[in-house]
Length: 202
Image (cartoon, rainbow, N blue to C red):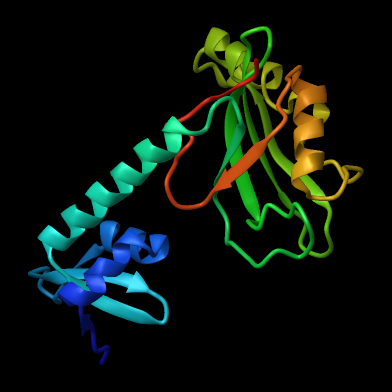
């Protein structure tokens, strides 16, 4: 039987310095018995699990929101990706350090795109899972027969001839393929979703 540790007030202080712990508490899930009676909330923080209260969850969510607002104030017009995969230690300079990242961008002409890139299973190569023209998608509406008009923009999805998975190469690819002028890139793994920010080229 699993033994949960109590989330002490001392440990809760760490949510202000440890984003992984903060998010684990903020996204704690409910636990129930075999008759679906609620037992407690559980925060998964590998290799530990913690029993948390609604007040602790609320505190962690408030801190996450504060951190998001602070981050958004300082992004400027950077190319901002949201981490969707597992993080890892840098393998080389400019490594995004997440296996799968995505962003919404607005190019120099005011056209909007959704892009998801990542690293290949072995090696340093780059892959593109999605390259979607959101502007055309909005024009086409929900008609599934029109997906070919906005999916796989510039035939970038699932290509095997892309450069290494580095921040510099990602910026160059985005600028060339989508008509942008980005010079800096940020990959955020803890604070943002793609609904929070559109990377706008200026």
